[in-house]
Image 1 (tube, rainbow, N blue to C red):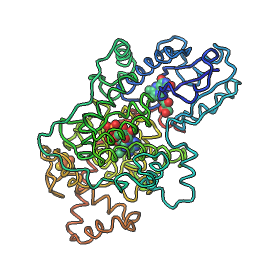
Image 2 (image 1 turned 120 degrees about the horizontal axis):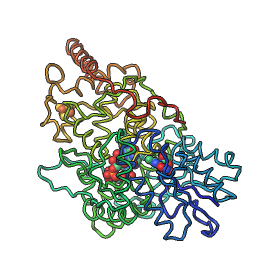
Image 3 (image 1 turned 60 degrees about the horizontal axis):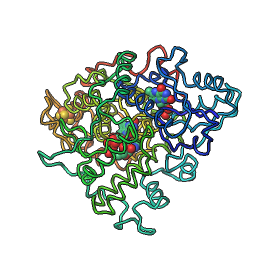
Image 4 (image 1 turned 180 degrees about the vertical axis):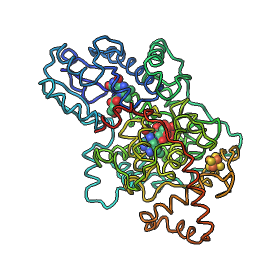
Length: 523
Ligand code: FAD
Ligand code: DLZ
Ligand code: SF4
């Protein structure tokens, strides 16, 4: 039996391994150029994954599995997943292939062809590391008018008995967000996620990535991610003990120089398989039960994993491969160059892009209300925006990135993920951050010299998309405010936005995808 294990399937308890006889099985792990370059991933993301894959080879061998590990610099490496599966099938005289479904339509299509390409039976198993299978999500979605996350989440809580008091939610409410999202007081001490010194395996990978992917976006230094399950468990334990109790309070805050606040910074570990969603949820629930973390924090955190994470994966597969191409607002502007360089006078953008370049990480509100918000207000092509997110974050895989970008952030799915666009002017950013006080623009100004670009762009976005958005009840107040502005104010606002948009320099092609093959390898 040949069991190909993908780079984001680094779990010893993988469905494809369960029930296999170690004496009759070869596990294949292949480091291939095609997966590192189908989009030109952040250097740190490639280094994290290659090092985690190498450590997982050791973990599998220690657990008794025979592993065929194709290293990146193996001269006979074909540098594609399918090429390596075919070679390994021949090398080991395999009689069958067993694998777990990939988290991306593009790779699923490859897996579907492995049987035909090798002439062997190929079984593709459901990825039961997720708590909601594709079929279960389809059943839940069947016949519903809207696919609201909150109802999905309640069903998941009930089905998996998480934070439940028999049939009722613990504490009597499903959601404690009203107790969350406070403005942080000045000078609060934030705990940093634990930093792991690169070991010799990681150092070798860092040298490889510096050599082979020198032109990709992002810094390799500092590299402090955990690359083993033990390290990832340590990071989880640290979060539960030190940061979870205040997770909810300052979830939406953005502070210069504080990149992680009380966030968990575990998404690269969860999404690569080093951590399991079930154990993360159980650890958070246990902290509530022992009185080490309050309910508002634990419920808020559980909602992210049992709710949002499972829900976006459900949406990705339920909506099909063409979901990626949706463009409900017909947005066509090329992504501005500063998304890749970080060079902009907008302090909020420069800070969020700068930390992404350094750490391959930005927290949710930076991704949604700064980086995504600007792209949507400016009318950027959602597919270009999606490519950017897939490249720059260490936790980005298409099943999770695409719905968050196409749906939640860009409203390009026309309202499947959210009942209104997550659009905001400078006010929201000012309320939740200390960026504006340090910015050359004046957040209180809508027009004129030095006005915050988000302000005019916000109104221009509403005016530009009036035909599609005016009927949305949740935007009624905003359109009323726009209507009440004087004709002169409206004209000046739109002229200000037009000037801002005209000054945006488009990114040169080739940052996200090799320009020669751009678009060719999407499903
Ligand atoms: P915390 O804030 O501490 O949350 C805990 C965990 O909850 C995360 O680790 C993650 O596993 C889960 N989670 C929270 N929100 C979401 C969500 N909306 N979707 C899925 N899981 C969620 N997350 C990714 O893992 N990969 C992506 O490529 C990704 N792209 C995003 C793009 C946009 C435009 C937006 C708005 C969000 C995106 N997210 C993505 C969701 C979220 O921003 C990250 O999961 C989170 O910032 C990871 O950091 P953390 O571990 O510190 O999370
Ligand atoms: C992201 C990634 C990278 C950079 N490299 C590899 C690799 O060399 N080998 C591999 O098996 N997987 C890699 N991956 C992860 C795959 O692209 C991933 O399985 C798909 O994105 C599907 O989620
Ligand atoms: Fe961003 Fe505007 Fe605030 Fe500057 S003033 S940081 S551009 S929101």
